[in-house]
Length: 477
Image 1 (spheres, rainbow, N blue to C red):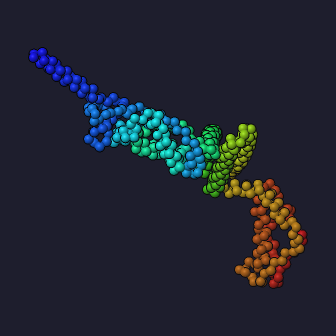
Image 2: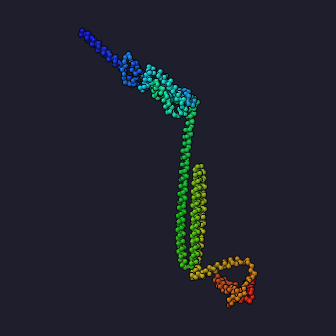
Image 3: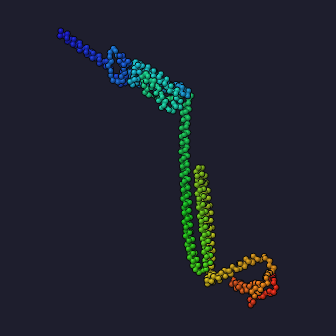
């Protein structure tokens, strides 16, 4: 009796242990790289899926399997797919897919892929990818497929991914290895792009070289222009300094002349001083005019020289170096000729001004000595000057009338007696005779003598018979 109880108890314990062991074996844990699919009476109307975690699988009424989450690589060699332009395109590519662990998609995988080998899953996925890839190619141009790879991959991922989700798969990666066409259109586009890139590069290099050459030419031009300008300014400054020095000398000379003129003004008459001052002022004005004209000519020659030199330099830099050398030589020759001409003009004008000033100074000194010789008597001084020029005056008058034929001189008068001094004829003859002594004095001062028929002095002038209305004096030539 006691042993039977022990055996019964042991049996119950063993049964409980076996039940616990059985229950433990039916508790299934799901690894992280797999999906646990429990099918049978799950109470959900479909299989129950778990991505990770654990679940109890009832015996008899439930069973389970695993779906592998390991990615599957699929090579898709799509050949001759028609593009939107009806050009056949080959798009060899590699797709990476795997069973999705999204709750809704896992049910699709359990329903369509459970129990299938990886090769079978690859074949099913490959067929779907082929169809969707052809569809995407048919909706795009070749240029768009070739140039906008991101858009092409986005369209492929969208279309292929949506179809794969229907069977419980997800698209992990798309790698398009190449895009080709049977007509060589893509290759031609590549050559065109390469040629354009090469041409753009060559154009860019040529433009940079051109900019460099232009910059160098401009720099050389600016340097030469600045050097020429500096030389011109230096020469202008030197000329200005010389002009100022000459002006100082002239002003000093003018001051001395003014001082002498003031001293002579106190000694001589107003007419002589006014005449001398006017001559000096005219000489000064003429000298200043010559000086201004000379400076203007020099400035114009330098400005034209600088302009021509700058133009020659610019043209020479654009052309050849040899032309630049020839142009510089020609510009230098032109500059020297212009400088020589300007110097000659300046020396000529300066000599003329000095000559005029010297003549005026000599005349003023002569006038001063003549006045001094007459002890300040202006009338005697004027007579001396007239006597000095009398020979020239007489020669001029004789030259003026030497060819005039005078047969006779007839004097007409109206016969009136006048104021008791005789008629008009007698007064004319008397006046003519009375003018002989002053003429004799004038000729004596000049060192000359009157002719004998005019040299005798009479006590009374000759009389003329005025009994008739007409009186005639005939003078034989």
